[in-house]
Image (cartoon, rainbow, N blue to C red):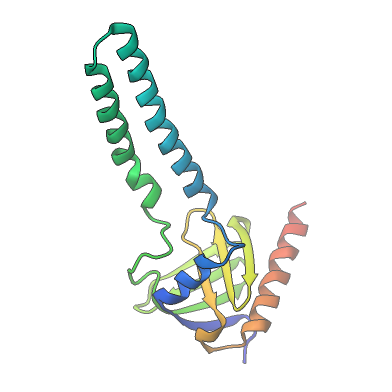
Length: 173
């Protein structure tokens, strides 16, 4: 059996279990965008409240509420698009195969789609309990639950993955 290859079937409850762990946080990009979104809405409301006070017209407060709401609604696709772990599309749920290659991690899903996460784009390999998450730049994280592995050795794969990633990090410095 090849230690550099693993096949698993991912279900929505596995993702929810991963997100419920106390040590795991939302990806940094999503967190920053939520802060920007909240800050923009509050700033719009505060500016309009100050204009209401300065101009002695309650219309500016209504404009502030409308502007803050519009800002939040317009930035919603930025926060929830593309990297949502609980998305129920075929790219997230179902049968997956990951293989370690010289240039990175090859990820294949049922239906023949495949992509390669280059070692230089890999940002984090985090194993908590019986789940491993692989995060990279410009792609949704790969979540690998130990109990959903159908082919391959989970512990050997994770150890090999970490070894190769750390070797790449050492080579870069």
